[in-house]
Image (cartoon, rainbow, N blue to C red; front, side, top):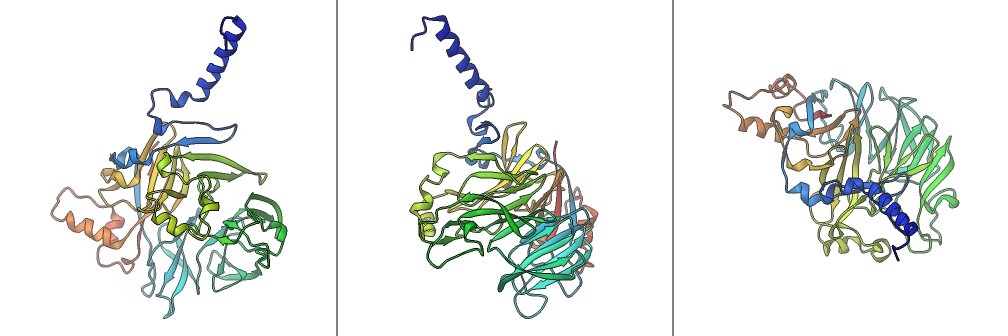
Length: 420
């Protein structure tokens, strides 16, 4: 291209200016792993290198404003063995314990309901439950008994069964967009055409996300290939694809895109994660690993196979990266400071009373996010600090560990306020 003509020069300068404006966050003196730019009109592209954050420690007070410790107070004949799912409303905590063996001799699941101060409110017993959703407008809990897939079980917030409803669509997980509208997600990558109809409506069977109003499908998104053999779910450690904080977010398995459903029930890709090549699944991963995913991950180190536990709290994106051959890691990305922090590299300090930090992020609410500390980790920390006259514990922790508490076996719920 010749730049002898003024017109050509002007066009070239305009092109350079546009490219510079689109990439201004990446070239304003910021390190490359932390820059983000607009990938298109509505999608934010977030480029991160997890290795950088995993080699850099920081203090809790850099990202936390306060920490509140909430003891979950079960009756003497019950306890929460672990928190597999936590949902938060204005008045209650809802806790799913998938393998609670306390209610009777058989292995059963339990959905515990607690007041926001941790006081016991109710418990729902079910043979096996892997997921539940809240109809927040109608104040109802909806789930299925995994041993009998034919119907929804619907309970009120007092723990009383309201009714049962037939399950018209076969999906893995779901959440409510309003009292009459549900988003269903099933996570299929392939579907057999012969004799394997997943849904009562075959027209919906080639879409992973379906939105239904009053039991009737109205929108369908995220199509998948129906010409090949069936491979259902298959995402390691998956089971939940909807995450609620300021909005309802959806992150499918085996991809790096985060979606949201707007008020018109239109699906938008709001965030696209971009990782260094050595962490990224190949473009043909789905087609080349049918029935061989476990073997593939065994032979490929530290690929990021999914993103989970995504929450938007204040100016932070909080998310968990799940690696093929190492432990999952929780990260905080500050969209204002352009800083990536690994939760495992955060050192507890005065902001968290020098108590151990929870390992995973369980829920988000306004400027707060929730985690939990196990009894064993808490006891270990307190024993290590015996004799330290400067140790100061919150009253709720003192009560929890006083020996008078009959709910000491339960995990200690932690409500962290994010800084900013």
